[in-house]
Length: 227
Ligand code: NI
Image 1 (cartoon, helix red, strand yellow):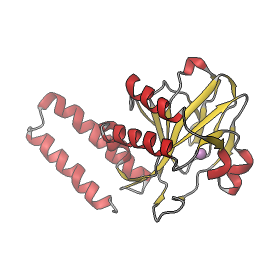
Image 2 (cartoon, rainbow, N blue to C red):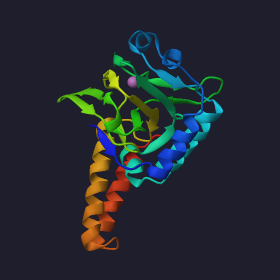
Image 3 (cartoon, rainbow, N blue to C red):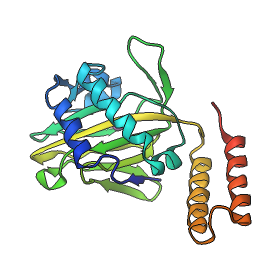
Image 4 (tube, helix red, strand yellow):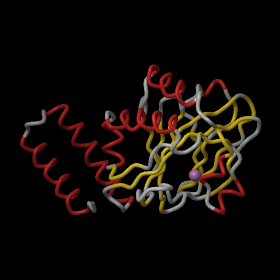
């Protein structure tokens, strides 16, 4: 399941992140690739763990912490420090799968990648192509979102980025380990949480049924969480 998280960054947030990364050092994107990906990947990437990447990544992590829809959908346990990439002049990234485990160079930080995320940082009208194409059970879905919006998708899916034939596509991408490893269980929890929020709009959060359903949500979360 793909989940769109709108407005992770507002216009000021986008400008702040872009101000930081546009001044940073960009290199060939293959520095973070696995062997298979390296053959398919043609883009540039902000140097990982550089001051610009750390600062902009921190801004994004702060924004994610203020986004309840992200928390509900991802149930994040650990988030890999956000990376940044850029495609222009026909650059693309062919079909690949993301590595199951991500280890941050020079540290003990490692995560199991349950979910992949792309946060778009460029006005979609300003470039052609650059869709993120994600294969799932029902076919291939093309994702190209307004700046500041993000898509979450299972890290297990085969995906690619279509060639950028005009302008430039800038995005942040990262992986996260969820507290709930199993995709289906995580989706059930998200569906239940969403339904409870809707019922609570009408009945109020102190309604007896809402309280009992909230209890069921937390008991399922407790049952399925690994920390
Ligand atoms: Ni990927």
